[in-house]
Image 1 (cartoon, one colour):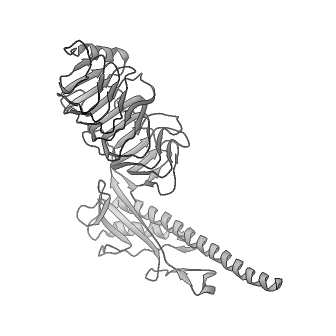
Image 2: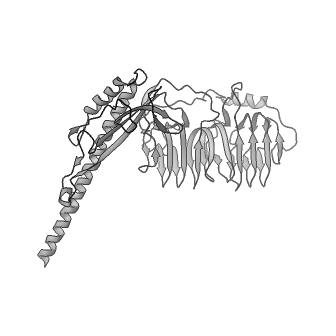
Image 3: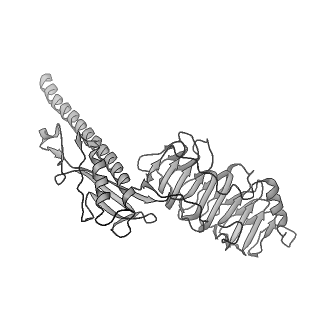
Length: 426
């Protein structure tokens, strides 16, 4: 009986080992196909603006690079797809970076999509398996897709300045950070300069980091590029010293009233408020266009709301922002191009360091266009999902709890984007 059991178990074990080996073969082949498709798309898209229909040069470039790569010991063969059929091996088209959609077109294209397949219809046919034929399955279909675009580098709508910190950008918990039309970049050289923990979702046209990124598989949508170059702080020259800050502060009018604080509903004028803001309940504060500076913390609790059009809020040294009420929120836009603070909505003192310097939470509407600038402290994003920021430049940033932020790029000044280059988008 023991011999019978051993014989049966041996067959089962052989079958399991065979399935594991065939599974590894399929996964390895898919990875090799992906490398070939990526290389082919990146090379081909460099010609897309110089070529004309039927884009023979572009298609030949993809074919030649694919042939220089192997998958399962066979060169990767692509059909040229001169008719530009949507499901062909080489498709010329247009990539919409905001909607993250690819549309086949030969009119002003900016992208190339490559499909590398081992299927019945492909030149090399399906992938032959090693052990599965024993169970009646001789082959497996394997296919991958890669899309490359030729465009200026997407602007860094999220820029993390800390050059060495671990978890300089930390997405923590069941939440999301989406940057549909821009880039997420961290200057940290740490092995985990960008860190995702739990079950988060992060989306960007491109995610780049000087060091490395640590994240669960599938939690970052869009290409992730490590070992990237440092991006300098584009606002480093705005009020760069304590002297310049204090001169600007001294130029602001001191609002009327003995309190020097916004602590009641109403409409307020630009100026220096030495005691900050403290509103709660259902108070609604409207800010007229201009520059405001707060000498103490800005606290928005309860269901209070702050509205402002064409405003920049400055937070003096050690003054912090805390939006944490169950219905609290903020809706604001920055000043336009005629202002020295064009595109900047929240600006924190360069000597305000530490955790939770700018804390955006609460359950109310939060839609702040323009740049939120926290050059030496931490930005903490929390509260209910659905909040929007125009752009972020911060020393460090993190999410907290179950939240969701979209960085839209709205209201940002046109920072230089650089020359066009080829990069993968999916």
